[in-house]
Amino acid sequence: MLKSKLHRVSVTHSELEYEGSCAIDVSLLEASNIKEYEQISIYNITNGQRFSTYAIQAEKNSGIISINGAAAHKADPGDKLIIATFANYNEIELENYQPLLVYVDGQNKITLTKNSIAIQAA
Image (cartoon, rainbow, N blue to C red; front, side):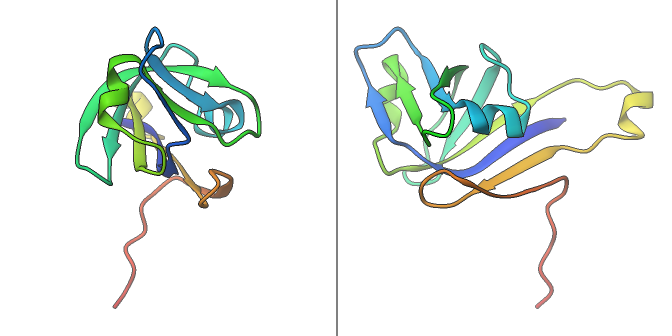
């Protein structure tokens, strides 16, 4: 099940000569309950690339989203991403299950958090 999602974050850095991972502003990690070294799935809205890596901390309130190592070939500064985590839940846990969805502005500052994707009425 989807555990958490950072929706439409902007890549600020793409660092090929780095060990690997994705550095994410600590304020975004905290808001989305993504733990450092947790596996993350990344969906690049700009170019369609999909890949997985793990999260590391970037400076709090910096807005940093840095794609590092080999994954730097899959995202450039300015690209828009969805970053998602998933978890296993038993039937009892699913009774109260809600994903944590975090939305940001163009500078990766949080604008909204919610627990469901609301369908807009036409």
